[in-house]
Image 1: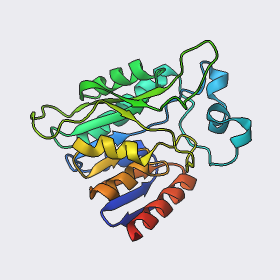
Image 2: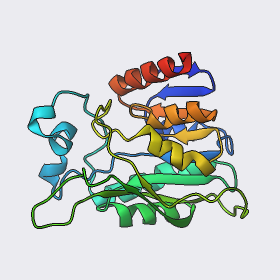
Image 3: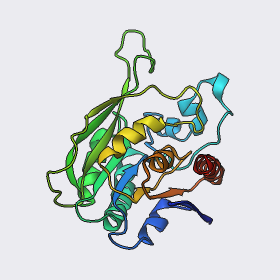
Image 4: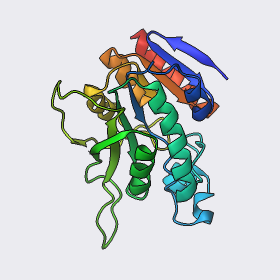
Length: 240
């Protein structure tokens, strides 16, 4: 397990649940997490496939490392999500905002886990991936993903008003199989206090947005290959 500091950012390699439990209570300003959705297939045989097979066309396979934790069915995903969300809530200060990415398949389970972990569920933010996302003949596009959000207890009604729908295209050049735009993370961070807790760092788009905004950041990643990618991206951005 590695831990490195880059400016106001701390990157930790290891299992999120173990690392979250080691954080001091109330030491984080807010949570923004992008967990593995386990959404690549409707059946066990589908979910057990490598993530590259579930999320990429055959021509793109091998471009990025595989990522861990994407084989759970909905019952186990609910149990696991409740555990890590409870540990994250303990680490976030009272009134801090928590946000968790999900897709349409896991949206109901994610809202259940969010509340079971003790967060006050306050709404859903929509990520509109534009009309470039997943065309399907005779069907509506799966054009949106979501952020289930709420607070650790009561939060005063003050501060800026932020949109509830953000329109960002999936990056043409990605660093992760399921990589998301840094600009999307910057929009979401507009009302989240630092240090920002990111238990599933991946290639660090949240970390990069935190660097740009001058927010403290704690990122965690179980896959060594993605830890290396995140470290290099953060190091280069901090140097600039």
